[in-house]
Length: 78
Image 1 (cartoon, rainbow, N blue to C red):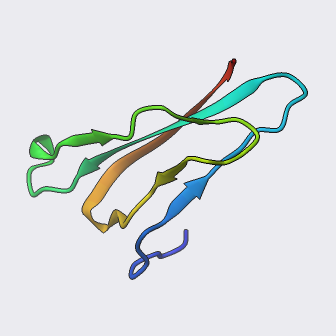
Image 2 (tube, rainbow, N blue to C red; image 1 turned 180 degrees about the horizontal axis):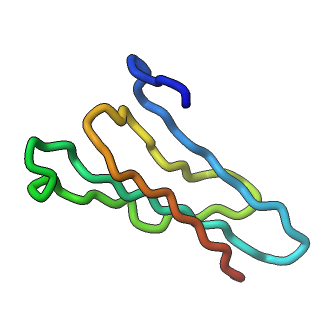
């Protein structure tokens, strides 16, 4: 496991290369760290999609304030 403390503004760009018209979509969910884990808000980017040109990215940010991070993906036909 890599220790990324001290690094901020992590951005994940993504693309899919396919002979047909497909998009790859990513969604990042993360929960705020709190003394009581039940009080931390669950934040979500919602689905962010790209095809062959990575116009969009997911901002991973500084994860020192978050835990329970989940990165999901789906591939859809346009």
